[in-house]
Image 1 (cartoon, rainbow, N blue to C red):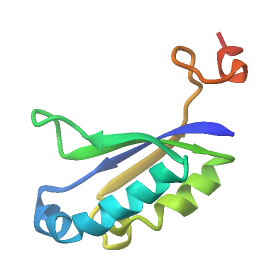
Image 2: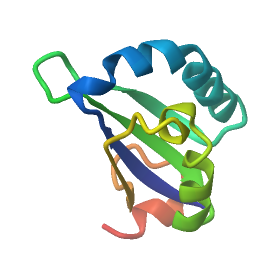
Image 3: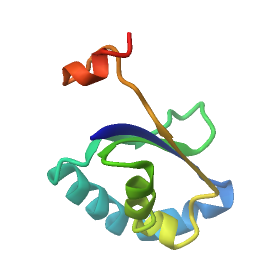
Image 4: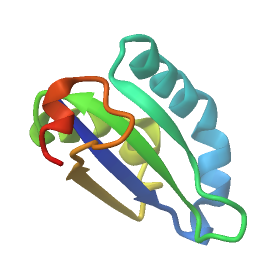
Length: 102
């Protein structure tokens, strides 16, 4: 199992669409959290460009991509740019395998 950092960037023009689809987006994320795939997530602060960071546990980057393709924000074209990067956790790691990269 690997850890992946997913970032979303939103355009200012997507605000109304995000408001409309937010309940389904939150429901989707809650399910991922309840199932143990989503570790942490949230929007960037008010002084930052609109976007969010999600930390996902999955077997592969392809699995994360397939999962995040199901997010209502993404499915409805509200994510202007998405990046998915594998992240080797050093501090705060849950397993010895993660800390072996020191």
